[in-house]
Image (cartoon, rainbow, N blue to C red; front, side, top):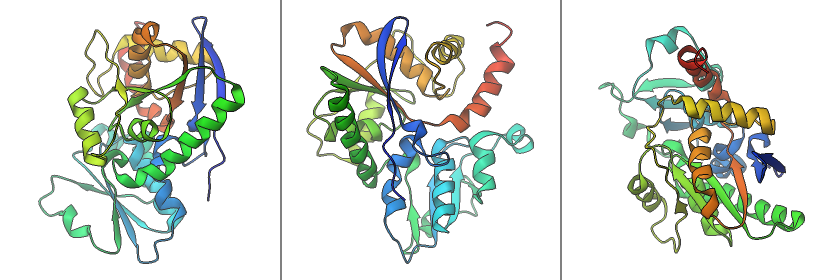
Length: 291
């Protein structure tokens, strides 16, 4: 399987021009930045491999994408996370629901009877949390090459890239393979967290992406009414649905800094929409009456 290049779309928000790279449209089941990060495992043959192991949160986009990859390859998929809330166990939703449907075997990382290291053998592929590993460079190089073609075709003057980051792996490799600036922001930790993540992937980078911040500190996974409202406004005005966990915080920080960024912005839509089922339900329970 190879990906057909995702479309680059022109949109306006609050009367300003934005290009959106629609990586959410790569494939109905295998899309966004996780498809790019895991492309190496998808396109190469691994005759000895029988299973793939992943780590992360109970609604991780990587969890679902790895379940799709494992199903495509005929591998067993084992996933480790810290905990599963009782509400989620009783009300299957989002990435957790669909990963289970794809055959995911869930294990708790704090279970003394479970040793993840014992699974790291020549029949197993171990994927770091969020796809933070050197193999991600193949798919992200392909994304960078697509962007270069898109920009030339659209005759975009002085382009720059923006995307929110979890581990920052996508932003890191885009900066490596693109001849123009890549801007990002942390949605999980702070600037030091992002730089630490980057060092774990590639210590030999000549240039890191530029990190944008905002006046307010946002905590990962916490609900913010202004983020939910912005997500709604973007969807209403652009006709594009974004991820509810990363994108609203990314757009907040991007819009706060946009006036000082010179050039034409290209926002990378990194998918993750299946996770909106659980995030939207959380927001509606807490804020819909207010908003």
